[in-house]
Length: 231
Image (tube, rainbow, N blue to C red; front, side):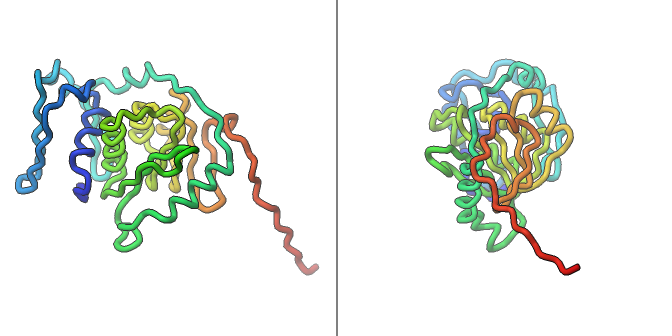
């Protein structure tokens, strides 16, 4: 279930977020075969404990059905993110800039978009795909390939903030997760556990902070409009 725009990045990010491969230097080649809808990953020395990692499987709320391998909750228990201050004006600026993207969605609909953002560089990478989980994996692959760290970054998605979305962003060590859609209870609980600032229903000059309000500087409060009514 992918548009196929960034297959190598998608596979790299999936391998990284699944923690099947820890070091990108161990990957020799990635070959995409569109005739069989498959990908062959060649490593220099195999993957340690691959059978054991694949034996642990967690079914998640991905588009259609998501799957994560390995003991992902054990990895989550080790994460403690450092929260940088985030200005309200920065959120507004990013939301305005994001309106220039979503090209596939604007013309055809039925896709999700994800973006890697920062206060200094704005939108660093934007990827659309059929499922939001594919888009987040492709951005994880982009970060891994370019040796980019998640510290100080902000991640945007058009989709719901599910547990899997929060887990993947936490594994990418990104401290802020922003969505124009809603959240799930488990997504909120995991964000509270690992320290992800969770912002949802973000559109225009409106957003809701579900976790991490203390890290946001409200420096651009919208004007209050008074409406006159007749008695």
